Each structure stands twice: as C-alpha cells, then as structure tokens.
Image (cartoon, rainbow, N blue to C red):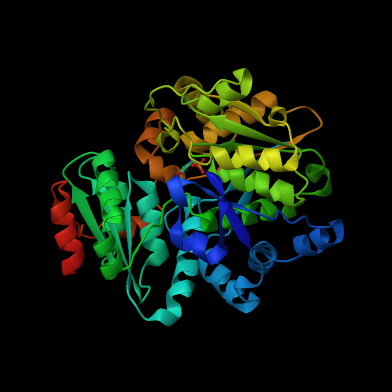
Length: 430
Ligand SMILES: *Cc1c(COP(=O)(O)O)cnc(C)c1O
C-alpha cells in the first residue's frame, strides 16, 4: 500500500512508514494512493464471513503484501475479538450500531487496538523498547493505554491535565501500571500537548527513547474503523440493506472518513449524515461553502467539542478522487436542548443512550425518508457519561463489572508541572 501526504503529494510512504510517522512533512495527513473497489461477488463472499475473518481479509486487500495475511489475521484477532459491534433495533426502520463493547467502552478501542498491534509488529524484530508518548483530555488516553497494555517492547506515557478529566476516566487508565505510566500535569490540556510537541522536536531524546506517536490521525486507526461498517451491513436484512442511511456523531471526523472509505470500496450505503453538536463548522461549510470555525463551545457531547476537525482534509480528498459531490453528504448540528430531548425520546422507546449517539439519532429521525432504513452509531457506553445521563433521564446507571472493579483501584499517576525539562528528565530516567 502506498500513501501520499495531503500537504505535499510528492512525499510518498508505505503503510508501515505511515504508521510509524503518524504525520508527514508540514504535519500533512497521509492518504491512500490506490482506492481498491470490491466486486459484487467478493462483497457477497465477505459478508458471509465472521467479523474477524472478514476484517482481516478487508485490511489485507487494502494494505496489500506489506504484512502477510496470517500476521494481519493475528493482529485483527487480538485487536477486535473483545470489541464486537452489536446491532440493537430501536424502531421498525431505525437501529443503533453499538461500538462500545471494548475494554474502554468507546469505539476508539477499534482504532487504538489495531494501531497498537501494527506498531508492536513493526517493532518486533528490533528488540528495542519504544516509547509511546501522548496527551489526552480523557478518552483517547484510555483507549491507547489499554491497547498497548502489557506489550513487551513498548512503554506508554500519557499526560493529562490534573483535575480536568472525570474521576471515572482517570480510573480507567491510571490504574493499570505495568508498561503504562500516567502523569498528571498541573496545567491545561494544551500545555500537555505542548509538552508532547516539544518532546517530538527534541531529536536526541527521540532517538534515545525511540519516541513514537499514537495520535488519532494515524492511518492504521482509520483503516481499522472501515471494518465495522461491513459488519453492520452484514447484520441487516435484505430489505434494510436497500436504502441504508447512517448517521454518525462527528468530532474529528475520523469515524465518518472510515465510513466513506467503506462506501468507496463498494459497500452499498445510500447516505451518510455527519451529525455534530453546536460545534458546527462542517454543517455550516456544507451549506454555505465558507470555512469559518467559531471558538469551541462546551456541550453535553464533549468528545465532539471540536471546531477544526482534523480529518476533514481526508474527506475532501476522497470526494475529489471519487468525483463525488459534497452535496451528497448530509449534515446537521444539534443543540444540547435537543440532545436531551432525543435521549428522553430514546428512553421512552426502552433504550438508554448517551449524548453523542443522541445527536446522531436526532438527525437520523429528522432526515430519514419512508423507504429508508437508518442506523446511528453508538460511540460510547452510557455509563461513560454516567452523571449526565442519570441527571437527564432521572435514573441510576450501574457500571459494567470490569469498570466498577477498576474504580476501586488506586491511581498510580505521577504529577509534574508543565515544564519540559522535568518531563525530559522523567523520560530518560525510567
Ligand atoms: C471521539 C468520539 C467521537 C467523535 O469521533 P470522530 O472520529 O473524532 O469524529 C464521538 N463520540 C465519542 C463518544 C467519542 O469518544
């Protein structure tokens, strides 16, 4: 598989290089050079397979011979066997695709776990320890920590702003120990990100500790996410497959990029709805053609509080390459007030959801036509937003067993001030 840098099309890399580099020169995103198309026959064969087998076949079609099939199968198996998607019918013409049955109860497990397997594989013969350094404002850190947990040649260091992530989030990834080190920073998320940036600019440090990034724009994450769209499709009846509309709660637009890539491969999805909260840069852009991000607003669906979605250049590139018009992409934004109403609406139908999925559900209801079948993506388990959901729906939510066990463990984090020399010392010492 060859990829090119969207900011400098002359920079080309292999899949392995792109995974290791994360970003290209000038912080450009990598994008696949070839976009394979799956024939109808192959598609029917794929749809007959189980999730793991189909996913490894799909990834092998995309990635090519850089990684042998049996290796890829083993990576997919380790990454996905604990995260199988679940389709839950809500109404006759609407269902939720729950993507939150992995170890950190959010769809980010798919991407993070596959990326970790690939990085581990690429590093396997070198016998060097590599260091994954990343900053998190909550959820990504947990997915990354669990994905690399107990890997022999990888140590993971995660920075997060002290007191600015929820107690539950902190328990989820700061209680693991082993090869996972967590550091709370006396500062903001931006300060954490700055420390990470400084570390990556420090070439000596980079070499000495084998620094590697694991951020959300890594191409391996995106490819992994293509797989659950095929799984969703395989779970539908023939009638439901006919006019399929999928509504996606969007933040950085990685999830929807993967969906559009699945469509470009030949998965017959009729329409995608890009659903955002009040951070509506994209819906406004699609309506007016003007790019005018506002300041980021805090909402109930806080994983989507992003005003400059970093995967958007990939969406634009895909549409250009396929000669698709951006008009075929539907979108909308949903206020907190309507998000609450939609959560209550779902509750009345016997389904407890959470704010991110509720945003997608709202727009699906609004835009779905009579002859269409609609799916909205459940990106997180309701108990990840326990307080919000309990308050809006006036219920008590119990935590899944794994998580409730974890909340009883002690936090193992170190704590430092946001001063690079302190972090540097720490990285070299351990
Ligand atoms: C990250 C996240 C999103 C947004 O996904 P993108 O791929 O960034 O668009 C939506 N919901 C939840 C719960 C998330 O954690």
